[in-house]
Amino acid sequence: MFILEYKLRGKTQQFKAIDEGIRTVQFVRNKCVSLWMNSKNVGKAEVYRYTTTLRKEFPFVKCLNSTACQQAGERAWSAISKFYDNCKKQVKGKKGYPKFSKRTRSIEYKQSGWKLDRDHKRITFTDGNNIGTLKLIGSRDLYYFQEFQIQRVRLVKRADGYFCQFCLKLDVRDITPILPQTKKMVGIDVGLKYFYADSDGNFVENPRFYRYSEARLNRLNHRKSRKLKKGKPVSNNYIKARQRYSKAHLKVSRQREEFGKVTALRLIQSNDLIAYEDLKVKNLVRNSKLSKSINDAGWSQFRKWLEYFGVKYGKLTIAVNPAYTSQDCFQCGKRIKKSLSTRTHVCSCGYIEDRDTQASLNILRKATMGHIGSKSDLLDLNAWGDLSSILVGGNTCQGKMNQ
Image 1 (spheres, one colour):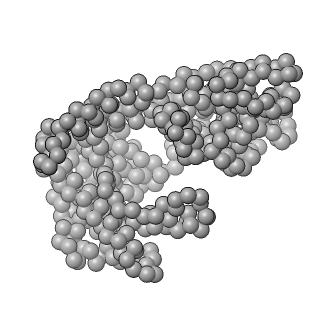
Image 2: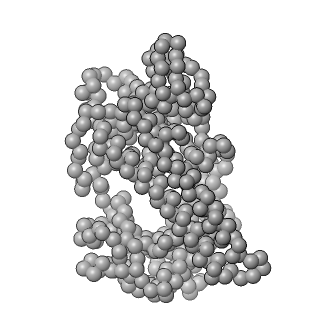
Image 3: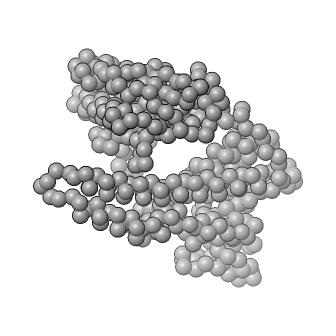
């Protein structure tokens, strides 16, 4: 699925109509979850049929497009089915029991309820919420795709405005030229001191976007809290302060996302094979002393973009088991235990190397271990098959960060 996003320009009453539609979607989703909680033997079909019942029962639900109501039911069943899957897989800890949504920020249409004007870059919503015609602001040409390729249209509310997303049934590999092979491969070890160190001895600094913005965020949060008077209605000044605080957080998240995207793209463009750790970030953030720094680094976003660009440009990305990659000596294989504060690997065999660089070399070795052939054969993408993301060594990391 390929997504194009445009910012929306319209009148205040139109945006209020979008807000009303989003609240209706949240209402339908929560009612479907409530039906599942209070009834026995409720399956997917019963949840979907209940959305039709809600349209007959509540006039404001009927104002919403029927496909948008169906999608609200899909959101409810998605949460329920995820809970069932976690129970079947016997996931440790909480299984993700469905909860009532309180902060829904989007509404999704399927093939009806909207009409696109490509010439004037406008979109009109024709359901009973009276959203009307909105201007699309963006650089991407609307003639870039065919209208039948639009699977869904999504309206998203953020702190800095409203956006329209077109979900296209499009394979990015069909529209992206394959990059020429560079005959290079690299292993990368992500960390907190540096964002990552590679097997060539290069380091990328950790930007720490949240850490550098933390003082300003705390100040804006304090100002927001002072505007809220206990026992009194929410004032306009509080709403403005809350919006400034939300925009500051949105800026930090976008900075982190863009940094991960650009860094991943550079790696893909300069290498044919990229090996990285298969880290379970969800387990790592349980460390109360490191959780803020790990979330600020954005390792999961970086991996997401690395795998996406690998598929898009036909490059090989391999996730390996991270166990003992920073402990085992790259030269002799001896395991040397060290704490996080020890940043240099020193072995009795005489091998001395930076801890992160040594780990990246072990990661690359794990990714290429057992492959028969010369280095040129190793970098032949056809020899690896059609998969562009391969898991090597199994998923046995139990939340232990060996860095």
